[in-house]
Image 1 (cartoon, each protein chain N blue to C red):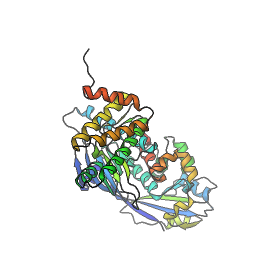
Image 2 (image 1 turned 120 degrees about the vertical axis):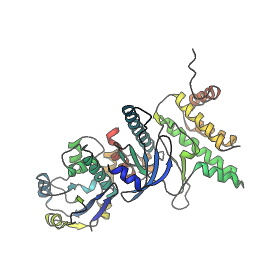
Image 3 (image 1 turned 60 degrees about the horizontal axis):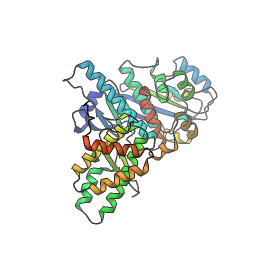
Image 4 (image 1 turned 180 degrees about the vertical axis):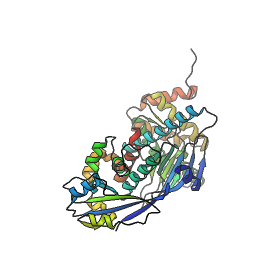
Length: 175
Length: 230
């Protein structure tokens, strides 16, 4: 159900994605994340095109953490920030974090290889139905994504929406 | 220092004066990594500044092209501490250089095909110059032909924006074309007509081309460096 990827640049780090729909306790989850009781980033899946998008954000977050260059205070908030095309932290949370009324959520967990992978804790906290991560495309809102990342029709001629989104995420710090 | 360790296990494809290019997997996808290594012959502060600026410039030009619908590799990640750009590997592709060499060797009716290719290159470059992107190193090796999934017409992808910059000056665009002309005619003998076709389609594709072509003619007479006399 979940999807785990080892980061080639940091072979001791693993990124796991868990996707839930029909979530009934988004407000409670958001509060636990704010309080630091959930060891992961909670993302609004309607803004995600593909699991690769999350991996790009997570890889960059881990890299900036190791270099001491993070723009936000925690790794999970840095992942959310990296998804955004702009450099405004509050905007990133508004668009890519979850809101109290949301009915679906993507949880991203970054773990050390030495830790035993255990996601029962997260699964038990979410009052919803876990679905395969590859089904993310069923939840994504392409209109909203195109608008936020300012993807033009001519750009989609030379690549996919994922390409456009990832390019912007990767280069936003130097534009 | 994760990136240098990672590169030591990657497959080195090419080494130039400015950078090394590797092939590797990145987040599960086939990727190309361009590493601008430190130049010890430069003062370290200057070196870091120049290298950083060129990395940033390259990434910006790629994004600008893609936004305009000109195919260029997708940038996946940039590491500013080691000055590495991680980008999409253009799979199922050959360089325009190899393509032309191959076509010239098996000369049966390829003249038409080469002219069509030249037209496509001309159109793409006109589009790029209309976005004020100056490539800086146009050669037939820096253009790839990517074959479509099902025998669809192949797509022209521009690569290596390492010397690129943004400029609206016809002079800069003219020099860009002049560099290509020199490279094109010296790598591919007897292609004067093909290159002429390229310029013709460039001129037809861009409203701003007359000034550029005029500059190109000037540059041909004096070489790419502007005369500093007087």
